Image (cartoon, rainbow, N blue to C red; front, side):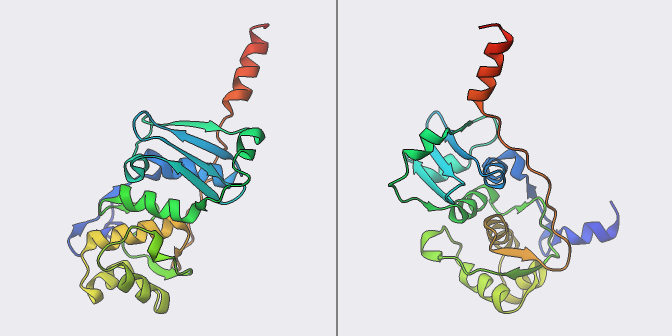
Length: 212
């Protein structure tokens, strides 16, 4: 790794640690949203969560939502909902998906940067979130206010505000995952996200192949 790349991932407390959105629920949520799929996330001990990307809302039936959102790949199940399943929520009011994305990245981060983010990103906060509905750190308001009024690098913001690097990483990751913030000094990394496979369709195809 050359010195230029190393410097982009070095905090004022040393090298930044990262977490991958592919290893948690973030990519599952992104895949559903990008392909307008309604899905159900099921866990053994933390209940279920329904994401209706066609409406931009989610519904959680969980005794411990933070615990559910920290599940890693292999510890949860994804089911693509049918139109009939989605219609069951027609008269219900859910919460915004951007809030879900913030919460998931916030809890999973634990002071690490989400992959795709860099320590020297010059960050612009495009949308001011409803902070009353989100988990926060002690300096969340100060961080967001600076990035909203004066786009700056995460490194410089940490030093200017005297905020721990881990807190900056957590808030930037959450804001980036939710779509509230973006890096304006480089082209964003936007990999193609394939849709979730429908188990109903897969079962039907397998049945046909088996001659049932």
